[in-house]
Each structure stands twice: as structure tokens, then as C-alpha cells.
View 1 (tube, rainbow, N blue to C red):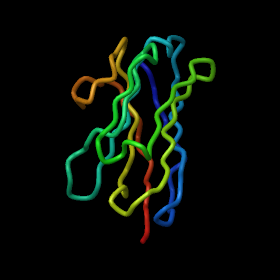
View 2 (view 1 turned 90 degrees about the horizontal axis):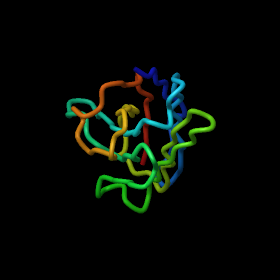
View 3 (view 1 turned 90 degrees about the vertical axis):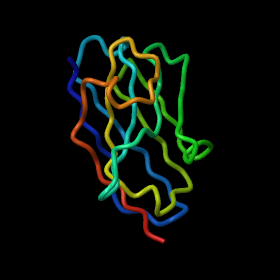
Length: 124
């Protein structure tokens, strides 16, 4: 099991950037895939981006391709979501999640461990 804590959210204007961080508490972080999901008010939680446990596979939701970049630093036990050119439709609570030896799944049910989320609000 791994404990996760997101940070880096906040208000930003359209066209701006944010970098979300996901701190993992585990001695085996290198074995975990990380996924980022988001949930807007009144909507289902949706997949945003994922990186496989060995970092050889990256997946992105179509609407964020070319704008968001996921990364993972096993030395620091950290994962990141760099978000550029933000639009109001990106407004949501963003969650990171971990899957042991995962292959960058886009499916929420594949991830067992979740953080508490961080709010991102993009104004036009």
C-alpha cells in the first residue's frame, strides 16, 4: 500500500500553467504506476494521464494531449503533472493514484491507492 498526497493546485487564468505534485510514502515507489484523474462538480471522475511503473508507457486523455505532461521521479518518491495552456474546462479536483507494477492504465478501477485531491480552478 502507498499513501499519496497531492499539492500544487490553485486558481489560474486561462492560458496559464500549473504543476501538480504527488508525494508517495512507500519504500517501493519504483514499482508503482501513477495515474492522474480529475472530477468536476456533478461529473464522474475521469482519466487524465498515466505513467507505467518503469516509465516506458505514457497515456493521456485526448483533450490534454500536447498540453499536459506526466512524469515520475523515483529518487524523490514524487510524480508530477505539468499542465500548460489551461482552459476553464480543466477546472476540477485532481487526484493521483497508484497501481503496483501498473502499465499506465486509463481505468479508475485499476488503481487501489488514492490521494485526497487538489483543486484546480481555471478562470476565463
